[in-house]
Image 1 (spheres, one colour):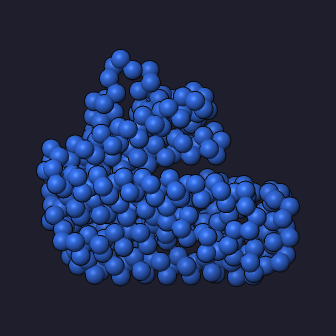
Image 2 (cartoon, helix red, strand yellow; image 1 turned 90 degrees about the vertical axis):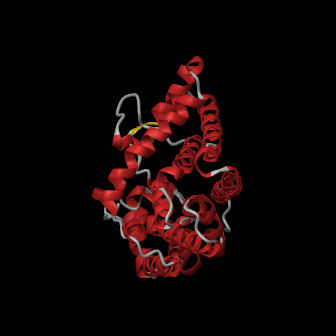
Length: 337
């Protein structure tokens, strides 16, 4: 089997498990409240369907890791659903905090129902995620479920701490390049590492294999975010769906921006009058490129990708599922949108 074969087998099961969780833990008595979740998950409302649901990469990584470690992937479905529910909880709250009005081409929950309801809906989704994780007792046994829940809760703390740093940095003028890494490790990398470790745990992997898979996914998440930073400034707008140099216009403190603030006086002066006006975004991006910010960003992405693939190789997962994890990783870090 190749990567697409695994996705074809896993995705319907993941979607079914997600729906079972939402409908099981949020009864008909709260159908209107539940509708906020089913809307956000892309199942109902205008524009519902696959494009509104996202790629579901995190649960797929859980299932691939489980099977790559010799386990039965269906036993890991509660963990796979839980991480996707957790991810979507964070998106609902992120949209409130960032005042983002659209996601995946649709109105966000807060834009549709108001901030208070969106906060409450995010809290509900977080609770459903935890309840779903406990269902691992039924498929893997008590001890594995307890260890998985411990990992899951520590990841929740890491995830929200990363969001705290991201929000704090928006108001700080003196953010340094070294401050960037703990922020993206929390926001992006920690949950991917959790996915790989959860899959390994459900698959009965040895601690050394689980550790290497976690190391792999942690560095993959870092590389993914650095690549995303590159796309936000130099990506093809026709492919990304965003205007050219969008991260400069919105004032995000991404890796190339922090590099520019440290090494490019001209850019630092322009940034001091932030946000960068849309009409100056392309010239600012060219200024960063000329001063080495693009080269540095791509080099860091490659370095982190190499670390990820090295850890994956050390895990020695030579079956088809292990090869599919490698293919998935390369697809993520080589994407153009």
